[in-house]
Amino acid sequence: MSLEIKVLDLGDIELDSSFLVLARNPGQAVRAPVFGMLILGADPMIVDTGYRNPQIMQRLGMRGIPTPDQGLEKHLAKHGLKLGDVRYVLHTHLHIDHAGKDELFPANTTVVVNRRELEYSVSGLMGEQYPPEDIKHLVDRLHAKNGLRLLDLEISGGEEIIPGVVCQAAYAHTEGSMNVLVDTAEGRACICGDVIYDVNDQLVTPLWQVSEREPAVTGNHGTTKRGEKGGIKRVLNGNKFILPAHDRPAAVDHGEVIGRLHDSIPGPVIGALPRRKWMPV
Amino acid sequence: MALRIEILKLGSVEADSSPLIDYRKSGASVVRPTLAYLILGAAEGPILVDTGFRDPQAMESTGLRAEVGQGEGLEQELARRGLRPSDIRYIFHTHLHVSHAGKDDIFPASTTVVINRRELEIGCGGLGGPSYPARDMKHLLDRLHMPNAAWLLDLHYSGPVELVPGIAAELTGGHTEGSMNLLMETDDGIACICSDVVYDIQAQIVAPSSQLNHREPLISGTSAVSRAREIAAVKKALQSGSWLLPMHDAPARIAPGGVVTGRVAGIHVPGPVTPIENVAVTQRAGGGVPSTSSGKDSD
Image (cartoon, rainbow over all chains, first blue to last red; front, top):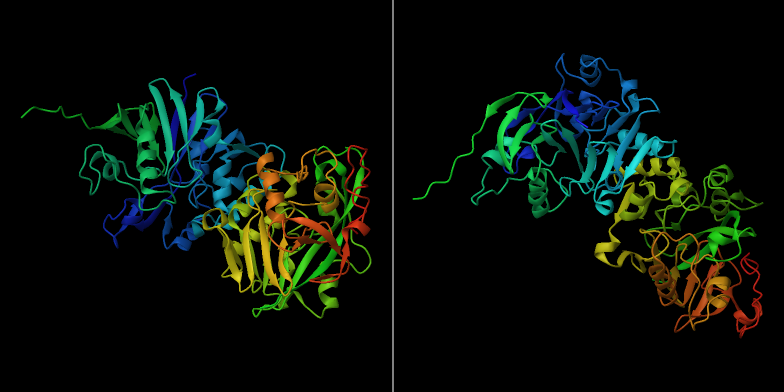
């Protein structure tokens, strides 16, 4: 089954640079997009729903700045869809800017979440990044018929949602984060949530790194540093495209970023990063 | 610091026999009390262990019939002692099942609710189904985001921790992944509140009718952990003090080595004890047909 992925532009945030990439320009504010993903080719499904409202980002000392052409419903409409057309809402994780609009979806839209992430969201371990409003809605879904589909990815090793869409444990960012792997006509795409915030500064020219193929980690994770490194490599391994939630997608070949894409997978590669051949001295 | 414990009767629950004791006859129903414990004598103020079910309707959603009898119930039991909810300094939760955390919302935010973090996770993770009601969990989520309204423990990583002088919490190792025992120093030895690792002291420990091996307890039918861990959790609770205090049965007096020697006669721990031979039929069935009648000993 060949599926397509469309980037949904849900609304920007302004935050400290070092939150995105560890130890990058602390004190300097940067602006980052918030992306959801729309998977087409079967019953429509989306990955992540953005923040509840711009004000809620202030709980983290950030600013939500949606531009007039951003937003979930607006971007679904661009593809001729309304909320009620969405069969599944998948969550890479449940942070404040990823699960804020689940309650807009009717009861016959099933929300798919890794059980460990739902657990982790009530652990208190990442504070206000899991707003009680969002999580209480999911607890209501937990007790509504087919309101949730819970995955046990750390134990199952991966679960197929529909043919061509498989979820796998990310083992990074949060304890319950998951990657969504999508089979496209041009190879497998990995929707990787917040395991990667910034393709250039974490992968292409990884900040502060000395060793070969050593990715830089984000400034915001609840797992170990080594877990983050391994989680990033897991995203790069075997996939042709990677789709972070706060940066434009990238094309990957044998674990290296070779180009960037805008809002469509498959789609035109707009910035090529040709691999440099190793040369003997 | 000598701590005293009083038994609060919050109501009773009628359930099928089999969820309580593994392999016991299905179809037969038993009535168990739902208890809370009030700990007095701590410098911090009165401490409550568990808060019972929200109301009988909340129990119905799990298929159980509950009743609050004359003079029973958390508010009545506290009022009888001249206590208002705001007088309670801490609520310690053995775990968060439907009959244990139903009334946290009558307590103000200044009453700190103490939970093992893993238990809160389990309560919202869907593994327990209706045993963790949405209303109870959503109240706890509100507390999670209010200053000092919740105190989360990390017993899997920390090992036992002292909560206030003379009271420690440690993992039960059984029942649910996050359940904890509470260990209190009294004038007459350690008292161990053992969550729901033990529902029925007579049927699980004193006369575990279907067990052949020496000192092999029966486990409950509601365990969410492996059989080996659940059996070990019963044994651990028995080794943890001179008093064993379950949440759905009358407390017992424990002799060194983990032997039940008597049952608490009144509402006080430490307090008067009825020796075990006077409580129920003999446990030394010796190959005959054991005839312990479930639950009779407890209320």
